Image 1: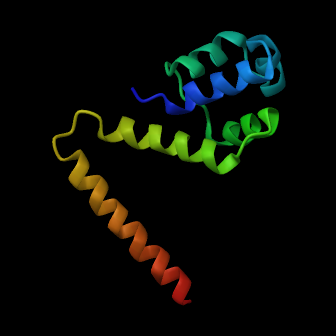
Image 2 (image 1 turned 90 degrees about the vertical axis):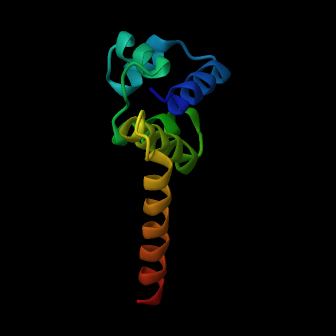
Length: 103
């Protein structure tokens, strides 16, 4: 299970000097849930990414990128063709971005 997002939000929490219970209260979740998110045992919801960014005054795009990377890893973990599939998805994303810019 990937946990880049959890590692980052734990680092940010510690850098701000906040306790887990303080952050959990701000996010309206319980402290054990926050602890599990930081350890990678539970996934944060997408809408919580923005909440973490605001709370820690962090770059939303950076946190969202880490969150998405964890989601992708979880989907392809253990698959023999994971890298090939990711490469194909990358090419499709590039194509979609070019198509969008042309409009």
